[in-house]
Amino acid sequence: MAREGKSLGDQMGGWKSSLVFAGLVAAASFGYGQGAAKESGPGGPAPMAPARPVPVIFDTDIGNDCDDVLAMAMLHSLATRKEVELLAVTITKDHPLAPRYVSALNTYYRRPGIPIGAVRDGKTREAGKFLPLVERKENGRHLYPVAPTLGDAGQVPDAVTVLRQTLAKAGDRSVSVVQVGFSTNLARLLDSPADAISSLGGVDLVKAKVKELSIMAGAFQKIDGKIHREYNVVEDIPSCRKLAEKWPTPIYWSGFEVGLAVTYPAESILRDFAYTPKHLVAESYIVYEPPPHNRPCWDLTSALFVARPERGYFGVSKPGRVTVKEDGETVFTEDPNGRDRYLTVSREQAARTREAFSHLCSEPPVSTGPREGEAK
Ligand SMILES: [Ca+2]
Image (cartoon, rainbow, N blue to C red):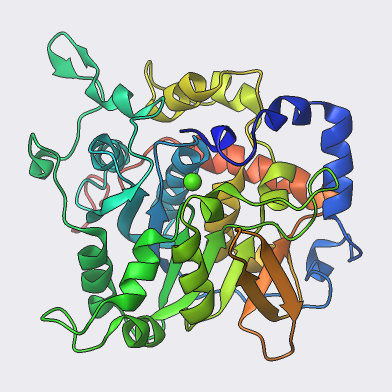
């Protein structure tokens, strides 16, 4: 089921109107400076530049909305630029094609060995619109090949195992976890006991190894004058409630309103991927909802924020605490000692950020090995 099909109903059609869109952007730009250097949000300090590359775990419900695909393409470009290191991809969409699809993307971007973990007994069990692209063949060969190590069954380890293994190997308080789907995997990670992988239980392992969680979930403004119960929360409310209650590191929440205000330029899909005859990213977008639709960039916001927090693409709120109600509503309460902040985006930031998205998402894969003649 696609994102619209759940909590949004048929509203997205109406939101395509530029008038409504302009209103939402304006609503999202509450009261802070327009200059990039000052764009620290309503009261929060400007985030510092991280040590690069930023080690990232990407936790995604890939196969539902196509913004997960764009976010992965962008992370690969940022990895090529040595701004991030993609340590692992874990999946909360419970469909066997999802890990195959992730492997095809990683293979296309020259990183077939990135560990992939998949949820067991998870949410959204239908194939969705674009995962089946990974099965397409031309002249008897897969158009979008997966890593040879994946095997025909496409089976990958359980996501919690991959999360624990990845964190166990990581440096102390080094990892940025980017969650852009449901909280199923991360909630189970918090509940996971000490085992052969790590002597630490889930909460302590996260506390030891994770620097921050950047999460696309919730809504911190009314949408169309109404409380918005956001899809990623609503699909697995108990897991999101557990995450909000127990997660032991700083959390940056990108609410529904942020991605809605930053749309992907459809002309980039039509033009910027033409360097290859068939491109899995562009095809997935088109199969999901073709141009001239400018897709909101929800998941991309959380990914870009960990890579370039200091570049003024977003503002951050003052600290506080997010709670998730039983019906999926997210509530932010200001607290100087709070763990949580939410992202904001002004009209000017939205324009800059969508350009950055289109350039980064459409960058061709590059071999980063030594050039011919250079010492290895
Ligand atoms: Ca997603």
